[in-house]
Amino acid sequence: MSERSCDLRSDTVTQPTAAMRRSVLDAELGDDAVSVDPTVERLQDLAATLLGKEAALFVTSGTMANLLAVATHCQPGDEVILGEGCHIFNNEGGGSARVAAAQLRPLPDPGGRLDPEQIRQAIRPPDIHKPVSRLVCTENTHNGAGGVVVPLEHLQAVGAVAREAGLLVHLDGARIFNAAVASGTPASQFAATADSVAFCLSKGLCCPAGALLCGTRAFVTRARRLRKVLGGGMRQVGFLAAPGLVALETMIDRLAEDHRRARRLAEVVAALPGARIDLAAVQTNIVYFAHARLPAREVVQRLADAGVEALAFGPRVRLVTHHDIGDEELERACLALQRVLG
Image (cartoon, rainbow, N blue to C red; front, side):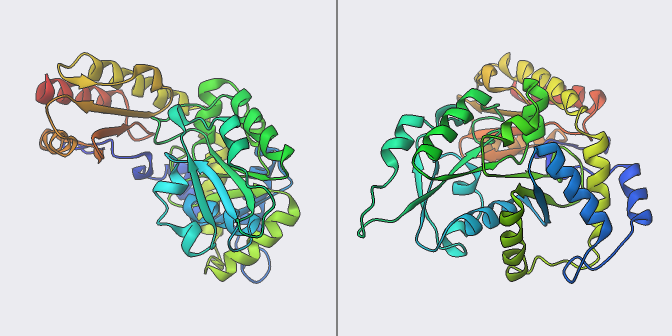
């Protein structure tokens, strides 16, 4: 990190580690769109094993993974039930509607949790005048709710309601390993609540790009065809897959360090006059807060002037810890917060 800047905008700003950079030079390559790239195959096999699924597909981003899940599970015009605060609904460019031609039905999701009974009531009865309810989407950790961990028991309850009605479930697990480390629940148990699950390599796991979409072999075969349609057949993509192997083998357990540092940031924020923060929601590496007198964009500008980069999300400011924020950078950020908002 620069001595002049402490970048807390997102865990996507991380630089690949030295081991990841070396892995690129040593990667065994093939044409992943024509036949097999052996490094991609190894990454997909490892991802499927960690998530307890039959197969996995390497794609460019979490957004592509979620879009492929919706498009693979649904026919055009089918309805997807999901939370009004979730990433798929708010932060993926409307792709589910534009590309997958799926209708989204958002429900309240306070604290990142869909109410199983509200899901039950939202499921459409058979009627030629109505769309077909096909898919329920969950998210863990839940970005919009502050990076909270949605408990396993809650996801199981949502899955039970969906399956009882014959619906499928997709889990947007962009930061599923943060959820696993913070809760002590294996990622495979979270994934078992859904028919498909996506996770990102390019967030807290520090890779330069990439995500995995996991599910049954039949599901992944269909998703692979759609990946081609979207231009996602990336040839000698083992160069990108190799850092992913390093990430899954070495970068998961260290996420606890990010969580510890986020908690430190949150406690500093909580002590600032005018700051509004829900400490109970700071469970992983994301900190959201608002200020009683200052708009979020002004807070972000003041922090930028002090050498700390943050993001404004509506009325809230977001700070995200990650691999490139050590204790030295953390304390600089804490001092900047106290200086400009204290």
